[in-house]
Amino acid sequence: PVGADIGPDGLFYLLERRFVDRVGFASRVRRFTLTEAGLGNETRLLTTRVGTHDNLEGLAVWRDAGGRIRLTMISDDNFGRWQKTELVEYLVRD
Image (tube, rainbow, N blue to C red; front, side, top):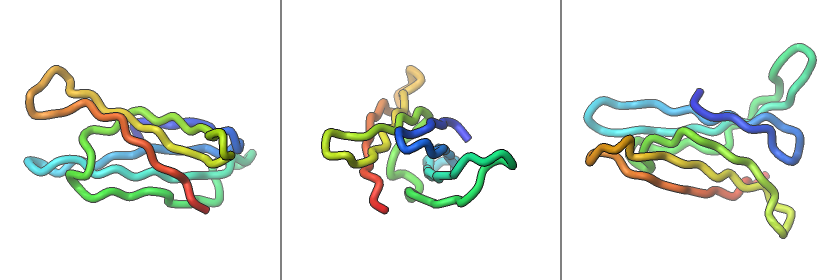
């Protein structure tokens, strides 16, 4: 896990990434309910292929003016030529 947020809907959102050497990163966002026993009711919202985005590592979950939940994620280039800074956004569709 590299990022997490509790959305305006009270649910827990988790950003995860996977690195494939010499190829790039893949990302996944899952959503959970929070219970006294821990996390429950997992829903996979996003899975990207390796190379779709760079090193996504920050997550903000918010509701737009139309009432829709959006995921905004960020990566940075770590001051390196081989990486890039990105700000990406996805609409959650239930």
